Every structure is written in C-alpha cells, then in structure tokens.
Length: 157
Image (cartoon, rainbow, N blue to C red; front, top):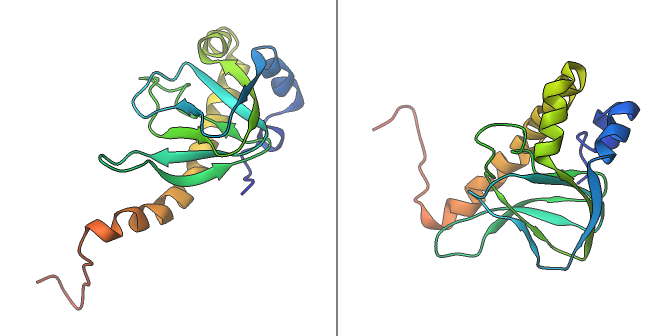
C-alpha cells in the first residue's frame, strides 16, 4: 500500500533535496532486520525498491507484520521524537534498496533551521497518523486467538 506519506507526496522539493544530503544508498537482503522494538532510533530509511514489513513483537512468537512499506515510503518514524526508540520492528520481506539517513545529523539541522525543523517533524506526525489506521485494524486479529471474544448487549454485566 502506498500512502500519502511518501517522501514525494509530503515534502517540498527543497526539503527533499536537503534530506538527500544526509542519505546514503543501503541495500538489505530478504529477511534482514532493519531495527527492532526498543532499540535506539538513530537512522531512518526511504524505500527505493523492494518491501519492508513493520512488525510487532509478541513474546514467544514470531513478530507479526502489521503493514508493508514500498517505493517512496519512509521506514521509521520514532527518530525525531524523544526518547528516540523504535516502537515497532522492521524486516525486509524481499531484497530492498533504501536511502538511509543519519537521524542525529537531521535532528541537528532541524534545530539550526526552524523552517526545516518544523517540516520534518510534521512529516513524521503525518506518517504516524497514516499508519495508525492499518495498525488499529490489524491488532485485533493478532490477539484474537489468545483472548476471549467479548460481546456487549444492552449493558455490561
């Protein structure tokens, strides 16, 4: 699913060009972990080719994929917001080529340039908002086999 939060859809051309200054091309093999929950968010990626699954860790089980990101989409939205920790995990589900950016360098430029410093976190918030819907819909199916179905009639018991 390509969302409205692709780099081309959400960032003005000048900001995209500026962001590319902090990026390098980085490939990932199928099955490679880009990051895991609770780890330090010190970089982010824009998918050039391939697909990356965002996943949620559940103890004792393989991480459950909640969304797949493709061309032009950003992987990682935790890096601009303290405490700079990943809230999900991400794994390449095919060979992937990315633009990888150093989060600390981008945060430093955001602090120096108020306009750029406003645009980049807003882009992050748009990404969060756009991804909440698929995550919200996917989560009940992740836990359904492990929980009892509750049906409310007229009022709680």
